[in-house]
Length: 461
Ligand code: ATP
Image (cartoon, rainbow, N blue to C red; front, side, top):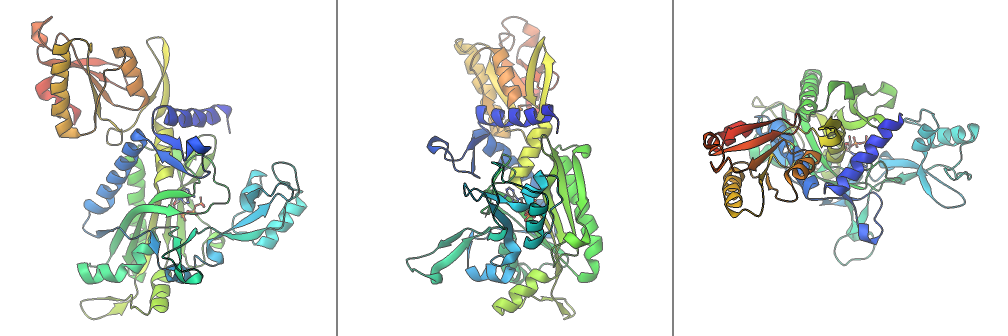
């Protein structure tokens, strides 16, 4: 990977901290690996991504239903889904001297060895044959399975009784509510249930900023189809995912669809596509997953819970639907959006950094400033314009720090598409023909034009 790309990622991480997008979790106590906190602008960007996703996949369609299930679920859910068993484990090896733990498949990949879907024995022999050591140069232990679920307890009981798990995916919350949605909404086939929420995985080695963390948010859909329709519906949803990634502003050449080869598919999946993004300094890696999971999940829950998961057609025909699962991690999407938007160019003879964020994702749509903050009549007029725009768009910033040049640089760095300045012309004090107009500066071109206050809402839309 080129040095330039590695630097780009470092610059983005540092911009995220400097400008209030993302902070290290528990930072003042030395941090906590695999956790990150979203600052004021990170929350805004995150919320915008979630809102746009919900609009596209739920609100604009007739065949999607929303859900918000509890994070803590009955342990039986995870037994039925297979998460408590080997199905949700990663291979772990330890540095025998320091006790540091690593994901064995990642260590192999870091040494240029393909490591997808290997057994523990295969991992051990590859480590031995290639004389792979820990990053500190020490011997490695034998590989063993490590379950990634976080366990906790409910209530005051000791022992196994109160044992629960923090959900490692939002999907199971959807399956266990399948019957509730059927009974309450009477959906017609095919239909989907969508959920956005937190998921927790005790990753052995969290790394690469928001890419692999222990607490993250997912946006997931379980789309229920008749078995014979899965291929047609798969193709339709695949296209919807392509549209979504365009909507995030991600360019075609940075997205790759990896059709997971048959021998690497999970045993219940007949087809899986990983949507990969070309992360700077890392290369193509999974941004979102899209899997055809047959009737595996509903069948398992039906068997384990004794509750029927059958769909009944108007003519009385009964069947367990098959399911297509598009699954998106918000942190990985947010990182991709930032990587795509991060731009350096030259303006007025100086290097400037700006985030070329799509307007619908930018934390602020517009920043409003009085030219000078010590002129009460300018401030008063600017406040008037600010209040009017805030009522319309809500994500409007008030910025009177430093001089106008500095404000532009700061707003560029956080991706604000437009800056408005209320000056003496606005008040009609210098050029009467400009009365009640403001300067609007465009983030990408740096160009400025005068726009009548009365036309601002239309202009900014
Ligand atoms: P990987 O192979 O990279 O570990 P996965 O195949 O286990 O990912 P899924 O179980 O398909 O991931 O989860 C769906 C989505 O959730 C992923 O595409 C990703 O966007 C997100 N995701 C999964 N694990 C993490 C994590 N530890 N940190 C951040 N996002 C994650």
